[in-house]
Length: 80
Image 1 (cartoon, rainbow, N blue to C red):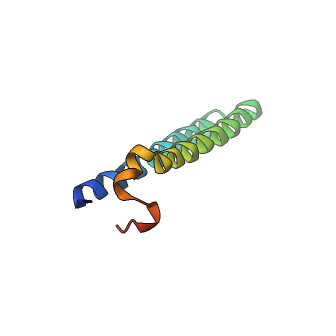
Image 2: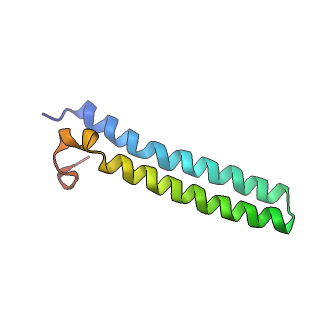
């Protein structure tokens, strides 16, 4: 049986990684604005790409982990 607490916990866990990723990107954009050399700007854009990739990978990994999704059955049946 799925309780409201379990669904809320799962939803909050899914929102954690995108929030962390957005925080990292915002700090990198601040650095890009402060240190405005061309090489540093290029390095920041590369790091932003890595952070976005990391965020997507960890969010998808969390969604697909069988241990967490097992209590819910199929993720398509989730209703929040």
